[in-house]
Length: 336
Image 1: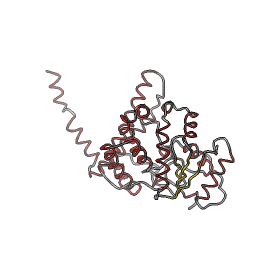
Image 2: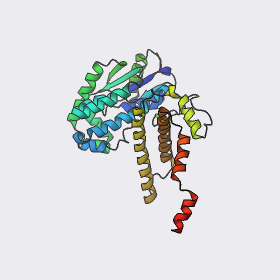
Image 3: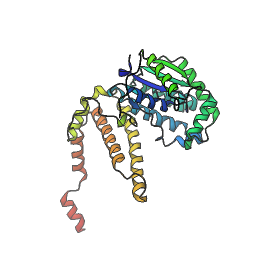
Image 4: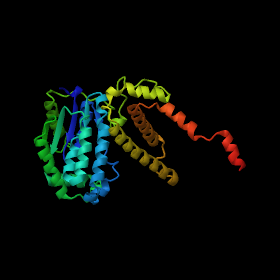
């Protein structure tokens, strides 16, 4: 395995520097960057205030959000660098959930995990609890300001136990207590060299400019997977979607419906933000977020229709014929 064809994931406890290292290595190797989207979780700040009350909602949202990203990996060109692995979601659930909530979570996680691609190399960053707390304090995220050191310590122990017996991919463990790869180029190069060694490589290749993205959804189109000019009819879009099933996880109507519900949540947030921006005159009033959310919802509706063998275009026309009043009925109603 070499860096040009590798999928690398950086992992570790909150505050250890996963995202910082992933961004740095992305520039070094010219890789495609996939970042965990955690700030969009509407339950996160409430969770840090009351973990027992909001743990289940927080975990399920993270699980579906991470799966939504991970399922795109099969269609993305390498190299890829990510700041998390899908399995870590279960690690957090083991710490935060119990009883029926944990059993429910596991049933959903197990159904999704079968379709997730394993990294070629996991870079596991470690640090002691005081170091982690210092880094969390330094970055000063509002929802982390009251972070409980005992919670971070329990996560640190869980991570070390988890990766101590991890069998899903090769794990490269790096102690970061004495490393400052943010400000010290020598420390950063030390880690890069260890990653190259973990991939069985020698010296690094020059980085390619301009590839950094916010996440998979912002990445460039994948190869020839999408035609230059997509078809415009709904029935054509259904057929196009059906021809690309080899790029998607195996068909599962129940799973498709769960993912559709997740997309509805994204759409609701995009719509709410646009309404607030329009009414107050502040914030982002661009139609782009709402447009993207609507398109994503449509993609999931198409998949549900394909799974059920329903022609959406025919169904919609029939729906209009049933629900639109007849012209004569309108006239009679107005006369009354």
